[in-house]
Amino acid sequence: MSAYLDHAATTPVRPEAAAALAEVTARDLGNPSGSHRSAQAARRLLDDARDTMAELLGARPGEVVFTSGGTEADNLALAGVPAARPGRVVCASTEHHAVLEPALAAGATVVGVLPDGSLDPAALAAALDDTVTLVSVMLVNNETGVVHDLERVAEVLAERAPQASLHTDAVQAFAWLDVAGLAAPAQLVSVSGHKFGAPAGVGVLVVREGTPLRAQLLGGGQERERRSGTPNVAGAVALATAARSAVDDRKALVDRAGPWRDRLVAGIAAAVPGTHESAVAGTPGPASDRSHKVAGIAHLCFDDVESEALLFLLDAAGIEASAASSCASGALDPSHVLAAMGVDRRLARGSLRLSLGWSTVEADIEAALAAVPAAVTRLRSFA
Image (cartoon, rainbow, N blue to C red; front, side, top):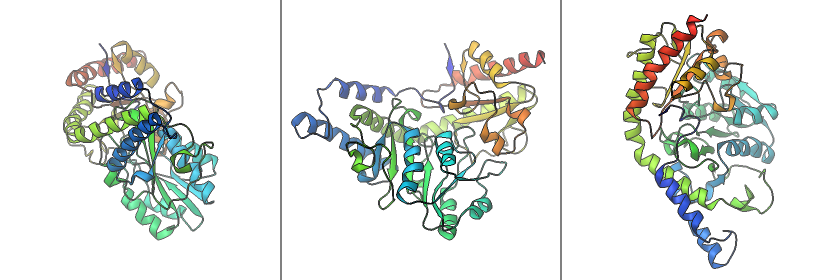
């Protein structure tokens, strides 16, 4: 039986979310944009799901735009704001590709980060002026787990570019952090259900009242004319169900996952010389300060190891993990996140991300503690 340690890529669907999806799918519902009885029943379900997501994200129901997931939510923000209010886009160099690529396509200014993965405030300030219309800084990095201080980012914007809107990709944050509170300074917030136990294919972009945004999907004018298309009612209900469970379970998850993450890092580092923990100063161990990272991600790099070969051996040993963003799985080039942090290219090529989630059990941790050192040792024996 495999030990699944790739929750940052996608996490298993929660049973209650699966049940909600099945129940709604089995009903004879109409199109929620219609006026007959079946349509109105669908509309009530959609409205209830919207109310739940608004509550859990610290927004008003009318500010919640249902999307097909985090990538669409990010793209809608990155393209929709400049389309409605032309100007420059600024983003961090460690953003997910769903932000970075549309930002670069728009000619964005990319701001560097410090060696610990945090945004360089001086570089951000230097990039801002009255021509900027949108700044995008993720709440939690999907590779390293580093948490960005959006309150501080908003302060810099207020000083240097008060006309700009702040967008945050909170896709990796929702299972671990109070997104409603920590993302409050942002005018646009992206989340994706499959990161916290909803099925893949449904997410939300919060667009706070007064934020300029032009729809990128045109047609029926749904979602208050911000995202056309027949709503995925069953997906929205499953999303809201999973989100409620994730919030209710959040503290217990953090309390058990944090020590497990620390055991993983310390145990592997003790067994494998030349282990480096990303975004943490010094040798990884019990004394390392990980307070600036979420509890569910352990990101390591190994000298004289190739990630692709390591993942192959781990998979054969029943450990399912990744090297970086799952979107880049199998790529020969090392992570752009590690490159932005100044990690040596040779070391970055030996990266490993072990990520935990709601279904992780202690046996998964024990399995990884046995398999990772064995795999690294075997690969080094061929060097």
